[in-house]
Length: 131
Image (cartoon, rainbow, N blue to C red; front, side, top):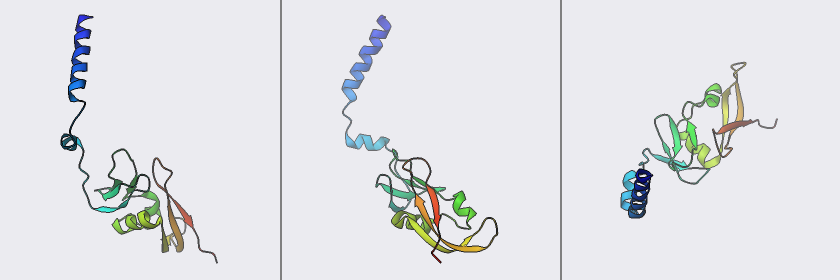
């Protein structure tokens, strides 16, 4: 009991002494977001930056990501490059005239819309032009 009381007193003293950390000191422990800013996060409004394998929200509390090797886009003959990510972030959709069908290998026209469920991975929907 004496040992645990000593630990409790020490913790209370440490918390009281260090509860007010200056902004300068806080910045030393914050991860610095790297990479070029390509747009704003649709979930939280923070900057979206380019990383090695993705385009990510610079707010560590937000998990928004656009993957460069996105399987859906790859299945349609497209890549998530910087230009594509910028368009999805600014407009939410991209109209393509040269998507490739997985089944037939033929090209077709459609609009790919980014759908963000608010958590987890971003999804994409196809909509086809009226004929």
